[in-house]
Amino acid sequence: MSVTLPGDADEWATQWRDRLNDRTEFRTAAEEFVATFEFEIQADDTYEGDSVTIVVDVDDGTCTGAAISADGDYDFALRGPYAAWKALLQGELDVSESVMSGTFDVEGNTMTLLRRQDAIAEMVAAAQGIDTGFEY
Image 1: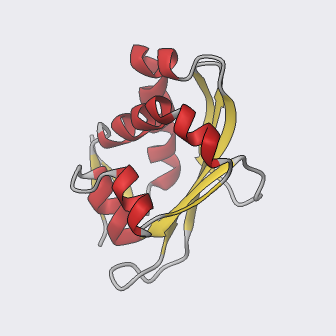
Image 2: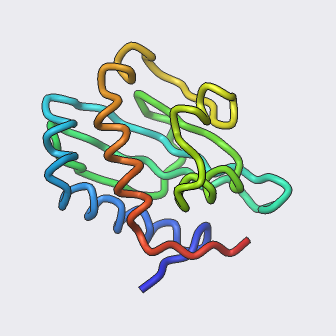
């Protein structure tokens, strides 16, 4: 069953957590990695609503939480416009290229992200595997 972004973002986040925890590749890539990620879907020409922020907690190969939040407590953040998130989730954009081109803004220790790029790739792959509908 499809979940829709941004309307069903909290349910979508729960499915993301479950997909991450079902992926052996994620457990391996995120072993001994503890971090809180903030993923922000921002308004743009396609979506004029409020930003949606999903916070994902990773603890030694397990996603311990994924939910809508706006508390601002995170180790790493990835922010970008709705249209870019839609393209990323549909497999039309590469996350690394999108960061390098400025489509997405990143906050956090770049060296840690580079060392953990396999875990990041698994997070994106899990997100792309969710049956996602888009409101806009």
